[in-house]
Structure formats: C-alpha cells, structure tokens
Amino acid sequence: MFKIKAIHKPTAVESFLLVIGIIILISVSIIKFESVPHLPILFSILLLIAYGLTKKIPFKHLEKGLIDGAGAGMGAVFLFFFIGILISSWMIGGTIPTLIYTGFQLITPTFFFAIVFVVTAIVGISIGSSLTTVATVGVAFIGMAHVLDLSLPIAAGAIVSGAFFGDKMSPLSDTTNLASSIVGVDLFEHIRNMGWTTVPAFFLSLLLFGILSPGAKKDDFEQIALFQNTLLETNMIHWYAIIPLILLFVLTIKKVPALLTLAISSAVAVIISFFHQSFAISEVLEILFFGFKSTTGVADVDALLSRGGVESMMATVGLVLLALSMGGLLFTLGIVQTLLAKIEMLLKKVSSVIMASALTAIGINVMIGEQYLSILLTGQAFQSQYEKVGLANKNLSRVMEDAGTVVNPLVPWSVCGIFITDVLNVSTISYLPFAFFCLLSPILTVMFGYMGKTLTRIPS
View 1 (spheres, rainbow, N blue to C red):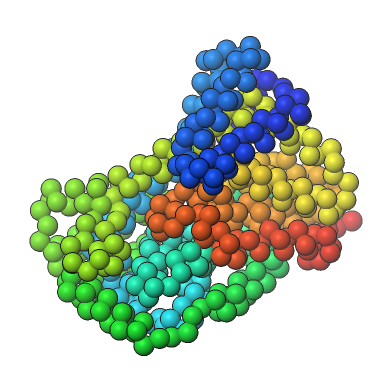
View 2 (view 1 turned 180 degrees about the vertical axis):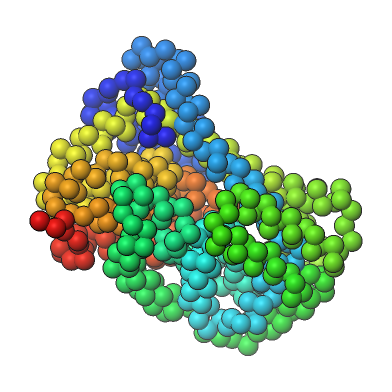
C-alpha cells in the first residue's frame, strides 16, 4: 500500500486533525458505545471522502484509493478463508479435540497461564505464524481456561503474548523476514539483535503469568476429568489426529506458501475424519462452510468445539477490507505522507529517532490497523534518519518489530485484533492489559534507546 501515490498535499494541521478525528470516532464508538468496528471505520471513510470532495478531488480518484487499499489485503482475505476451513476440518479430524485432551493431561492449574505462554511461544516459533498459533493451540487453551473457570482475558493475554513472541523470533515468520529485508539486514542477524529486547520481555512476561496463575483446586481436577471423559465419548481423540499439525510444521519448515499449507493440512484432516466419523460429503462441505456443531450435551464442550468454517470469517474479512480501504484513502489524500515528513524534521538525537520510529509504527497500527504496513512505512520513512545519527539498520528493524509487529493485536480494529477476538471470543480490550509481552516490547525498545544500550553503531 505504501506505493499508493498521493494526489493531494494537505497541511500538517489538516492531516493531524483528520487523524485525531478518526481515532476519536473509532475509539469512542467501540469503547463507549460498544459498536462493532465496521461502522465507525465506514463513517471514517465517509469523513475522508467528504474532505477529498471539499478539496475538489474527483470522486473516481477517491474511489480508486479505496480499491487500491482494499486490494492490498486480498492475500490476507484468502488466508482467513482457509483458516476458517482449517479450524472446522481440525475439529472433525479430531486434531483440536486431541490437543485439548492431551493438554489437560500435561497441564495443571497451578501455573496454567505461564505454561500457556511458553507452549504458544514454542508453537509460534515452530510455524512462524501468530494467527495460526492462536487459531489452533490458542483455541484449545482458551477452552481449557473456560472449563477450569479461570480468567479468559488473562488466558487470551498469555496466548497472544506467546504467539507473537514466536512470530517475532521465528525465521519462518513473514513479518520477521519483511522487517529484515526492508532495511537490508541479514535475517538471523536481525533475530539475534531482537534478543536484546525480546528475551527480557519474555522472562518478565513469564514471571507475571506465573504470579497470576491460580493455585490448584480439587474441583478443578474433577472438572478436567469430566471434560476429558466427554471428549473421549466424541470418538475424536486419536493419536493419528495430530498428523495435520505435524504436516503443518513440516510444510512451514519447507517454506510452502501459507495458503497452500493451510489447504493441504485441512484436506488431510478431512480425510482423517472418515477414520472415526461417518460423514456424507455434503455434511463435510456444510461443516467447512458453516463450521462444526458439537452435540455432546455438555455445554462447555459444545461451546468449545462448535466453531470454524468460512462463514465465521466473513465479519473479519469485511472489517479487514474496510480498514485497508481507509488506509488507501489516507495515502491517496497524502495524509500519512504529510505526517511522516513532519516527524522527520524533528529528529536530532539517537533517542528521538528511536522514539519517533517506535511511535510511528504504533501510530500506523492505530490509524490503519495493519502490521505489514506499519513495518513497511516505518522502514521506508526512517532508514535515512538512522544513518544520519550513526545507527546500523538492524536497530531500525528491531524497532519495526518491537513497536510494529507485536502492537497490532492490541488495537481492537486491527487485522490481528479483529481476528483474535473472533477466534478466541475474548474482546481485544479485555485481553490487552494481560498481553504482557506485546506491552513490554515497545517499552523496552524505547527505554534502551534512551539509555543508549544494546545499540549498534555504523562503523566509522
């Protein structure tokens, strides 16, 4: 989207007021009036169109900006469709039920949140995708928390923290590869350099989740036993049900495109389902589109297993397209470019450059809700500024991830925030205070910038 050319040059004041107006409109609508995000974003689009028309910009140019912005998200749209299919296929194939059952055997309520954080981090690193991690093992863990009557917001915070730690530090992650490539830094050098902020954030988060984890109770184990017995009665708990998960790991390591990986894993899960279920083809197709509906009679189990399907992603897809369309208009009208140019003029010291780049990455996430765009724009805008103050590019790539990649799930109308809320059924605002890793990462990167620590200078 950063290639969209501006057809107007607004003043800095106009750009600032428009952006503040949009942020207030979206924030107040969602937080105060509990509106779905679609409407305030649609109203924001109308606001931008009205501004463009008052500046005598032809509507067809504004419409093109909308279309170009939405077009930038088509890859994500197709990915969401296949994630919906993946969840429903992993349900009927027994993959998610088996993961849940196994998880109950391995996990205890004593350090539940800490264990959730570590396990999702490991899975995230293994597959390099935060959203896939959330949609698979994250769904399993949120179900466990529900059965144990533990805090769902804290559980979701642990899932999000672990998933985005894994996404950020995995060489298989698209955001990690994007951040390193956009500023010309070796991938593994980029990952090693991120360790200076990521490792402290990880252990601080682990400590906090350990403190928040409840003590074990006898009733909890009785609930676990009931839940496990109900899962066994579904006849979906089998050793071979983890084959789709193993296949997902293997295909990811082989760098097979994400869409194909999800499609292949889903197809294998459907095939496996015929080993223990007697579905008609028409029933399978219905489940893949509308999602799996559990009928065990145990409310907690049914609530956990009844999910997935293409239809479940429709609201997410609509919101992603609206958010990216708004981003396209912001670029077409030159609003983003004007604000970035103004920020660059204020940069004099190392600390101010790091602070400004971090705030820009966060700001783009808030304005547009797209982490890739946050990485791309921050890298494009600040590379020359880092060179001017003598900082190597790997410092910038680290900031792009610390304040770009991991901040996206904290924004209610962002691509990741919308998706996670939809999949885990926990609102972004609810889990935000407990997504410790995502909160600590930008704080640490700015703090080290002001302290002058862990920074690499350009050799003189």
